[in-house]
Image (cartoon, rainbow, N blue to C red; front, side, top):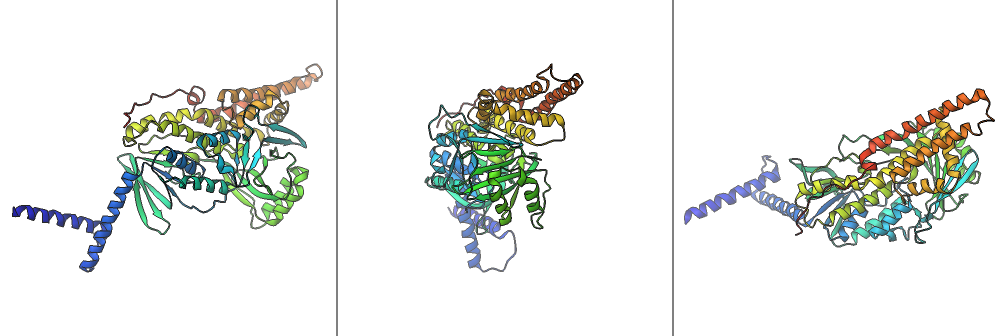
Length: 523
């Protein structure tokens, strides 16, 4: 009987030593026996806390931007226990993510988040106005078959995000915490959770069967294999107390060297985004940027906005941001998933980022609903591989259109590229199916990759017809030159769109098939 007490005592001593070893880091100290006891208790509480997190959290979400907040609410509403860790929970102040296409608004409705565009002074958007060389045309969204409230929305990005954070935090099973995730916790290739630092500097770990990384374009958690391209930068201004020539429409000016955007973000403010190719910008501090905006950009803006544009420059609140592009490169990892700008980015010219993110959330929610138990991470990882295929119709259409339109809308020294640009503008001004089709693609209302390719090459063919018709009236000496430019237009179209399609994945883009789902026993 005595040997049982001896063994119990030895085990208790070993356990106490292990806890002391963890808390002190094997450092020799001269602390009193009382301090050692306190450290042992503290370590015990931390272990218990981590164990509690492991059992009380189904999904960890890193980041509470548009994607992270919407996902937290969506999964929380489905009964998941969600822990969201966001670096900064104060009101964000960004110059992009301010325009939500109608297709994205429909996804908001599907997720039950449509009230997040209320009470933030959001503005309805019904289409675009396109400008080139003093000419303009209005391109309206094809909304005839939708409810009256279905339209695009433009707003202050931070206000929109805060509304979604509040909605997510209102669910009792969603925990929103401010902290910086420093690393994913991997064990033998499986992500078990994350390590993060709290607002007060305390380093903690938390565990869950599934970790979803939504920490945006500056993500430090995505793999280094992801190649991020920076084709240009935006220079941002806010114009105050002025009216757009076409109310409730985004304005795109096909300027030299690249497009200029105007859209209303509140009842009294208009956002202006000036695209500058490359990464080298005029200096703001020494006045080079203000001079560039006044001498190069201002003369190309609509006459109605000249005074407000000049006033905004003189006010001095000029901001810049690099435009990133990154194809979705899936790296299936048991226990982890990438989403939002951390996973996939496209040029923001078309304002499609939030539409893609919200569409991805709808796909992911529908895939996860049959899984009541997420603990079998390998089966879950294999099952979620279908996510990368199911997202393609919407994502690849918007991604490809954004990349292709940016290249077509930018000025060039190549006569064939400039002819393609002119043809695109004239093609859209034809109206009817020639404008409704491309605008339905851009808005996310009809995301069909094949229609995108058909319209893109229809623009090239239309451009060729403009060069050679009327055939009899063209001097014979010009016919050969025009035919050569026409042939080069087809070459330009191929060189623009095929690399984008290749990056998106030809098979997934045009022949999306449902991958075989692993059957899971419903617990």
